[in-house]
Amino acid sequence: MPEMQKLLLEGKSKRLYLTDDPAQLILYFKDDAMAYHGLKRGRIVGKGEVNNAICEHLFTMLAKEGVENHYIRRLDDTSSLIRHVQMIPVVVTVRNFAAGSLCKRLRCPEGTPMVPTVIEYNLKTADFEDPLINISHIIAMHIATREEVDRMNETALRVNEILSRCMREIGIELIDFKLEFGRDKGKVIVADEISPDTARFWDANTREPMDIDRFRNDLGNVEQGYREILRRLMGTEE
Ligand code: C5P
Image (cartoon, helix red, strand yellow):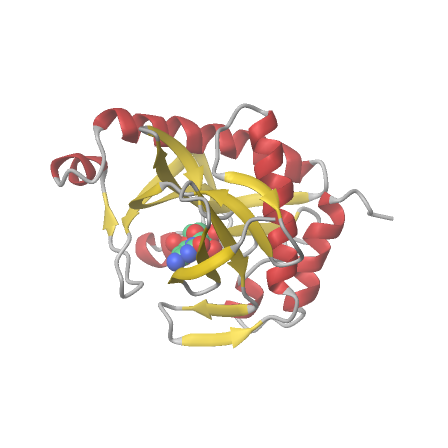
């Protein structure tokens, strides 16, 4: 068991700890939830455990499909061992249907199909405002090279293919999700998390959100939405 050492950083829903191995970190998932750039805060009971299990499932599946990522293994109910990568401060959002900030920004009705799939980039900032940027900004500001941007794009679309298919099989529509990437020995790999905190998952029949939007928009049954995604992923659907 790797030894948890000093806290490296704390985010809205996770903590990162150094370990006795400089190449590995421990990712701890919190129950805390935050929305609207920190204006709304709360706690979703059991979220840390569910997100840890969902990440284990999805990152393991992606690795099997050849998508390199930072995930090593689950350690306990709420924490996992990951590779210590150098994070690229760009949030890559993949959108199959319009929702959230895209609807507000472009006055587009929620649920409008995005064909071909839309990819957006935001610059990660300390104040959670994360302004929208484009590829030329990323390259001109030396945030990432053109090759790295190409790799992030290709990987994001491949992750979208794999996740959309996996979710459709369990009656869930993948509306959108965000990814973050890191450099591991010079190679760009998927990092951070993929969970109902960072993706929109709608029940395919009812079109009801099962994700963090239940918290953001006070829809109730927040914990149930998260648990239902995990239950279906684990193949325990009745
Ligand atoms: O809010 P917006 O529509 O831009 O979000 C796009 C996707 O990125 C959603 O799945 C949302 O949950 C996720 N997201 C995130 N963290 C943020 C902003 C958005 O995980 N700070």
